[in-house]
Length: 218
Image (cartoon, rainbow, N blue to C red):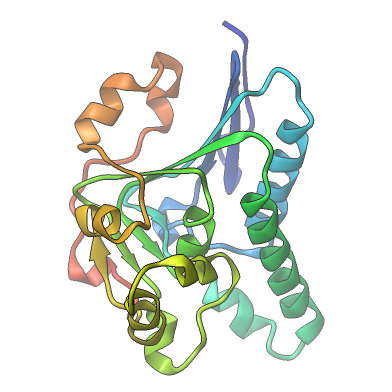
């Protein structure tokens, strides 16, 4: 079985197994927050595999207790006196969201644990969204008056007043609520996902650890 894995110390891991391509956000101690390097590597893998005739399925997930808690606020704070770097990562993130929306290969997001802000922007545009009993989804920036944007603007297709509700409140949803709202396609218990993942994905599986309120961004 053909397999290629990048350095496990990298912030984004890429794995190739037969016709499947797996991306793992690999900053578990920081809840897989999205930095400029993360955006750059995600774009690199997606561009490469979109052109790869052998790649038929792209899966993205997070390591540890989160899919992604959103943008790396420390990066933006540290770059407050150097706006060019902040503007660049924001531009690249918006471009990445558009690329995911228009991607030519089938994509699946395995969303276990926290998915907020920029993490929500990554998962929402994908064709298939698999959530679990431990999924926590929200756009907390809405609570401080920041307009939800990038991939999360996808909520505009929701029926009734759900779109306004989510955009204005940043309300938290669990896995089953995401499916009911039309923001996820499948609810699958975590242990069932484990039983279907190929053996070679085992080292990259997320932790079964529980999520406490201390883990959630304010």
